[in-house]
Image (cartoon, rainbow, N blue to C red; front, side, top):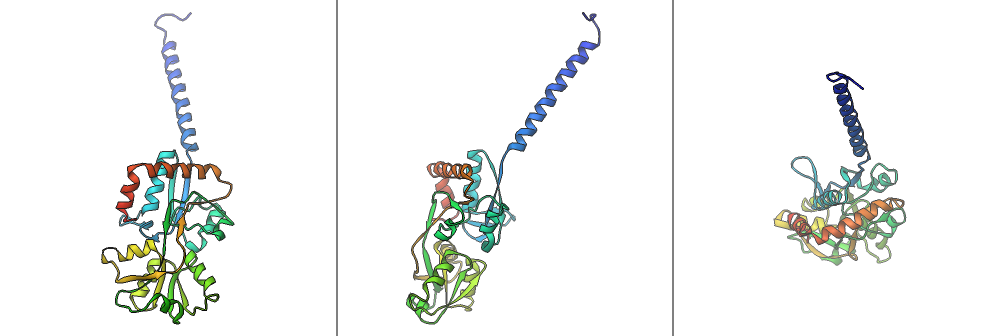
Length: 260
């Protein structure tokens, strides 16, 4: 038995408190280390789904949607701008963990990655300048120059369907759909083949003097691309979109980014 007034019990209490604090710190550190951060590859030149805002931060309908899903499903997400032509390769090489950036589900992509459930659909538009008299048939069979974003479903479709349909357009490829639309406005090409998202963005509030003269392919569904083996991540994403579409925030996002 220790004598009353001995200093040891007091040191014992301090030691016990220190051990408790240390154990808590270790536990917290483990929790932080275990918190999963997924990297989302985006095409930052694809408004309104993905772009860099005035503050220099990734933004857009897809970016905001995935941020909400991450918070709801208990993980963190980091968005990185990537070259669209190599974004699937970056996914397969594990430089990123997903592509949530207006990526169309296609057989070619499904051969190497697995998509989430579709969350949005887009149409395929042919654009000309507002004062142009060119028609859809003119663009496809009138020996015209069409602009298209390289590496997209639009690019692949136009390349594969030109010869079988006896069309004679020339393709000019761009790093982004807005770049193709800008060259259209500046008279460097006769038409632009883009999906409805960048087309609506360009025409909204009179941003660009362009108009739609027709559609050139079937509609596409957007999905989140993941590696085949990442089943747990896909389950989180699918459940997250299911919850998001039931939440009022889904309609708020559509209104915020002028997504139809």
